[in-house]
Image (cartoon, rainbow, N blue to C red; front, side, top):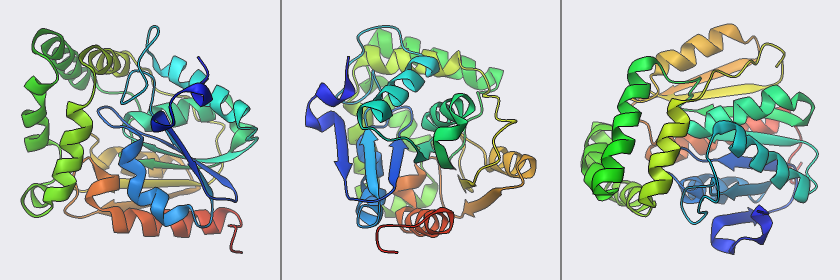
Length: 263
């Protein structure tokens, strides 16, 4: 299935300049990037889309990181994008890293927000149990628990609009699509990035209970090109919880890695 032939609600392309492609995470949709698109599309061509099985892009076959990477590669081919800046959140960082490992020459930079390098065993089992719960009782059965544990306490108490946006994205997922996405993430393997030497930005939430900031610290220590930003009062939904800080970090990083349309 061609991503470009889907309804416009499942893909969004704005602006002119160097391409910046954004890949959302588990439970998210392309709408998680709304603050970043508004901040960056005046200088870059921003591309965001729903992963197959999420949001408004139903699954028409088995889901896996490898299949999402093929979708990403196919999308860039269709858009005739030879080289792009890639931004991922959570599960999306696995897709971005795996794509980069296979297509080094097509990656201008990577920005990994709430990095996932393949979940530890305990996380895999927890996600598989969540998939089973969703199949038994529907996506609504897990929403409240996710909202009470994944965003930071300050987000939960002081940012009701952000909480509403997160709830809407999660509750809008199809039961089977969300469950299959959980299982695909649980089955993922760590991408081999030993050959990657390009620009790398890592953004972590200090209170992220899903992708610990220690994962970003460890990755930053492995890559000489890495820049690390840890945001206080921030949980796992980093692009929404700390949109201003994320936007500023991305804008600065992208300007330093290549010219924007305004330069």
